[in-house]
Image (cartoon, rainbow, N blue to C red; front, side, top):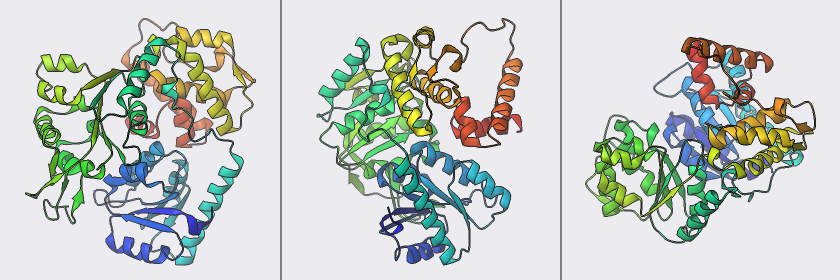
Length: 448
């Protein structure tokens, strides 16, 4: 793909910078979107199909350290691991540039930029993206989601119900432990619904503070509060005609449950600072890893809200209860990562499959994915053997292990991984089976 055909997103809290960048780049690129509110990044990435993101490193809460920029870089790469991200800052230095590249950014630009240099950086990024696409033997874009592989009877029953429910507009509640694939199942239902051509908007309610809840879900008007410099549609309006997926709904405080219930009942939202309701037409899918019936019994979750969201209830079984799916899931990831990393690993030994089926997988499919990825990267032979797969808490552990011992072990593992990959956060996190955000939190915790 040429630069002129690329789709670009620019995120910066400086309106003047956004205007100048768009004025310059719209003459050279097919499509340029600008956004000053970084909180909209997840929606834009999920729905915008961008090739490049120009991301400011510093926002109003954190003027010069770059911390917010790194957090948003991590979020973008979690949502779209192959996204080309170029970091932009007025406070750049060599150390920060190196950190940005190690954290997964493609390049680094200082502002005020020189127009020719900015264009050259974008050209270089697109050339690299094209080279990756030409050399990487990827899985077909329509390959099934890994957690939807279903040889076990329990998983087949879930998918059969999902297939019957998908064409309807029935509200769905998905239950299951962390890592069982609730988000993927929600997307699976949306893609098989009559709303498939409309947006699929995912909202992590567990990550929303009470102060941001109404603005994020229902929107706000200009002047509604201090930072409300423009009118902004909320997630319900963004999902108009499509599906809104409310993840971790069990974490919602009672006061906010009441506000959500009103919107679901009336099918209307009122932006913060406005008195004019806006009609919304969305299909609602919710999910939680908590015992929602127990929460209702304890009066920490409203029974009337539960009735509204669980017209159909689907429960994803944990991986330890579906051993028949472990081998095909492992093979799926083996093929995926063998091609991604150009490794000669061809198969998994029967001894390793047996070991995997005996393991409890506390992190479920997400843990299996990370374990196979790490094994493919580090394996010395073409066939994965039991010793190639590191499984947390597998085998015996010292009975007298203390919290301090475990923390010390974790710190040592992180130090070793960072040394192995010369400080590269992305590669170290991958080997440790962590997200970049989780690794950053541990680095801060241990002062590394």
